[in-house]
Amino acid sequence: MIGNRIKTLRIEKDLLQKDLANKLRLSQQTISLYESGKREPDYETLNKIAKFFNVSVDFILGNSDIRNPYKDNKEELPDSFETPEEAIKFLLEQNVIMGFGGFDVNKLSDEEKVEFANELLNQLKLLSYKYKK
Image (tube, rainbow, N blue to C red; front, side):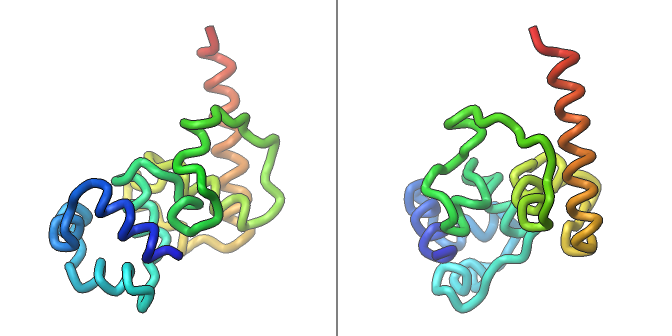
């Protein structure tokens, strides 16, 4: 599923594998392996691909057919996260956070992922309340 989504997105942007590889600073062979399903991107690369195509990580993973749920549906943020899976999904969709200062979600324990996502969620709620017009 991941490979098909990446290939479809690449073709929609009229890019060759080589072009996409250059834009993402990957090798053409890596893109080819992703598209053929012989290899899957790590969290950081998955986030980079999602950001480049302006879609959610869930869309690339095939968990959703909605390309960008926060953009398309203006979904409300949850109150908190209980599972590492929910936390990871949320963190990966926060492109600015995932790309900031070499942050690597792969190095966090499940407990740290949930804690970090909940702290980030609280900060977002505080900021949105403060600047809501």
